Length: 188
Image 1 (cartoon, rainbow, N blue to C red):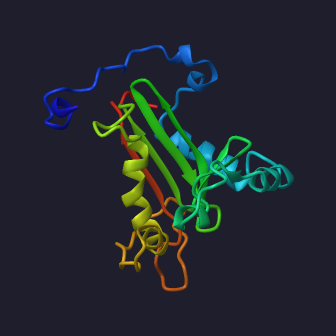
Image 2 (spheres, rainbow, N blue to C red):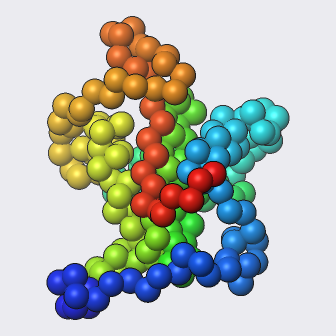
């Protein structure tokens, strides 16, 4: 681990590995934009009827029934019918050797976050998509990030772009699509 933290040991390159060994988990290969479209469709309901979408949301239960604290009270660590809760966002993380990702969408605010990386774990043993999601969440939801940290929210950077361009009453963009892809670009 010391070598990895010092940058002397790099992760193995799994770019050309065939993901079929993880069966269904490796059955879909997509670019980040396609993952965002799919996540928005599954969470917001355009790929599912409203009854099914509500049924999935109602199925969310804590993964650790004994969990307490801010994360548990804000909906983090919930799972049900292929859907995981991440505060106001819903979606799913994923890992396999050489790759990790997180795809979440907030149906109320319209925010979507896709994090893709070509590494399975950080040198510290953490899931990289979770490490990368924390500062993104702090920008999109400063009040939630502050509660998770046990403090008060700091003023977040105001995003000025949006795919849909919807604006709130103050004139700020009311939805955001954040795609952080740390993958070699081969086209989509």
